Length: 129
Image (cartoon, rainbow, N blue to C red; front, side, top):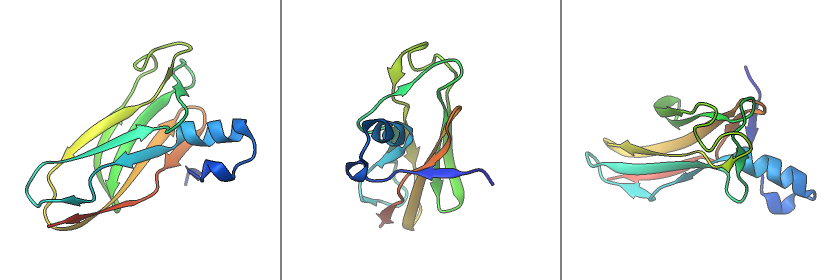
């Protein structure tokens, strides 16, 4: 199993370089806290909150995946240069349009950096009425 990295509260991190490293690789889920069954529901995932990620040929965000528990809901893949190209600082961002049925959504996002591996978001729970 590959190593999975997770975001930590960067206010607790001493060195700026470490804050940059953690933040710019971590995916963050943005959505409402509730959804209606059978209706379209938007979930955005943005990689990085305060810091941007490079888009170099050998170092870029290759994919963002969204899960409900262990079930994959969607995936977006990026090629080197898609988000600005050599030397550009960018943030991979994708919006997934879901149509939930009932119960709750247990959302987690995963981003893959070609140089620093797999990064997992904090889970987000969405009530479905």
